[in-house]
Length: 412
Image 1 (cartoon, one colour):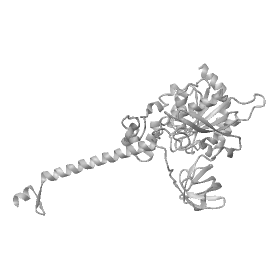
Image 2 (tube, rainbow, N blue to C red):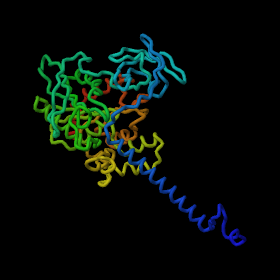
Image 3 (cartoon, rainbow, N blue to C red):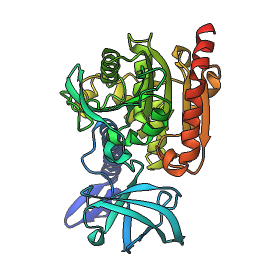
Image 4 (cartoon, rainbow, N blue to C red):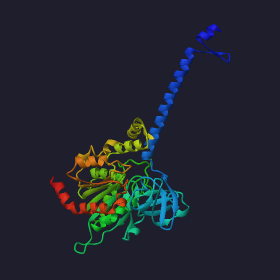
């Protein structure tokens, strides 16, 4: 026993040597390290998949505390405390209302004007989420419109066509704007821009694109972050040309901005494109994904792994992508020299989802073609909601200047 006590420990009739203890500890540390690596890998895969997978459910991050005849009290968040007018979706998007002015608030709650309930029983709802859409259907604008179909490479994609009134002296307009919505939403998002363009004499074509819930799906049912979606926008340009368009402006919202930039640099219709409007756009996806991961407290190495996974050919098994995504082609800070059209760029420094840094960098890199209009306070793709006058004036002024901007761009 003395010898045993000197070289080991006796417990329950068995002896565990000092070397065995060290081995067991080493295995435990190695196992813990492997488990940590595996967990980190799982987080990276989850992040990468979430980026490219169309969501089924949207998070309802607000509590509905009280509902009156013309007021509603919500839990206080950065979004619910932001002034303006917004959509309020509730009961898992089966109900829709609109809210306006902030009437009262404290550290826990905010009371706003309840502008109206379009459908659903909001008095029984407990959770909700804010949206910038505000208008749901073209008829709410009070203008004539048609539901049309765009023949895309994947099949017919629905769109709304809202014509501009005929000019008494010049007749029907030949100027069109094609509106491209962002990720995880639909073309209703872009209805807010119709009036500004219509007043300037532009027909509006509000399009859908692959995997957005309205247009045909790809085999993998994954976003390509603009790298394949641009083909559906290009088809919309063809539709406009076939119906008399001679001057086309592209407007992209959020991921729609990335899609529009791809279209402008890859389309064969360069002869009729006159300009680009970008609202809260994705100028560089790597910056966006890194920012969103940081906001979610994902460690930087895991964020970088998730980003790298999107571009790996073998990563398709984990992401579900049909083809890897070349994120360098989606970086228009680096690719600023590839852009030739006049650009109006609207972005808030308090966006909260897509950082404004790349937008500012693009404006600095190409002051010859980019007019940057900064906002503050406004949240992602909610610039119109926060300050409709400033937003509309920026677009109207740029459209009025566009002929001169095009002449300058051509001569330059």
